[in-house]
Length: 282
Image 1 (tube, rainbow, N blue to C red):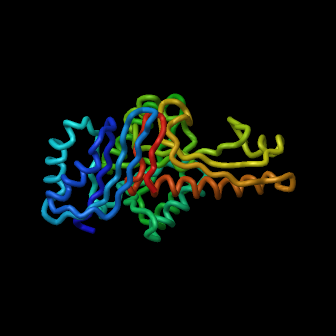
Image 2 (cartoon, rainbow, N blue to C red):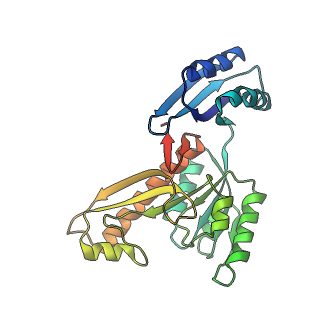
Image 3 (cartoon, one colour):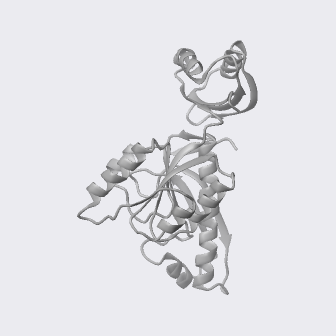
């Protein structure tokens, strides 16, 4: 594992890219363990994820040589050591189902994360954080203090050198400035009803309308509220016999599972951005 790396890349499609990447790795003693590719005919872009072992070169050496290799292809690329868990900060408000699920999966060895801190605008989960030995930061926020609060939140993210921020039912809208700073490394979860219900008490609204599907969507955070590139979605079927409490419980379970899968794929470097969409090599 100490010599296993993950290479993600995208570039304009052309003949011979797979051959060139394979040859580059072979020449440096690399052994490909897993590979996946996708050609987007609509945009003319090529995407690839390669997991390979290489004992001859360090991560820094590989990155330096990849830079020269990738330039003629116009590649955007990232190289990661597989053994390195992803440094993560979790934001949460007063609903703890997603937070609790992520912490349990992390401690059970199911997520390749290094959860460095929990940030909340309420104090509700400081004991939960302490039980997992994770630092808890209470950062209250109001309309008058939003700028200062977000500055403190971003300071925590930077101090922890976080590669990922998870909004685990964090019920505050991030400013455009913070969204830009966290671009590509912040994941949000929200309910996704058919039809959609916004605002307060969505499960009550859904129950009043007699919905037959409830669901959840995990996506990257952008300045466009709940419209970032989608990573994962799922639904659960319901019928007239379900109470508001039933819908809420089923919705929380779905949200937790969808968010966990999105975080897992991101932490394993399986998600590549493709404009407003994602390419996911499962």
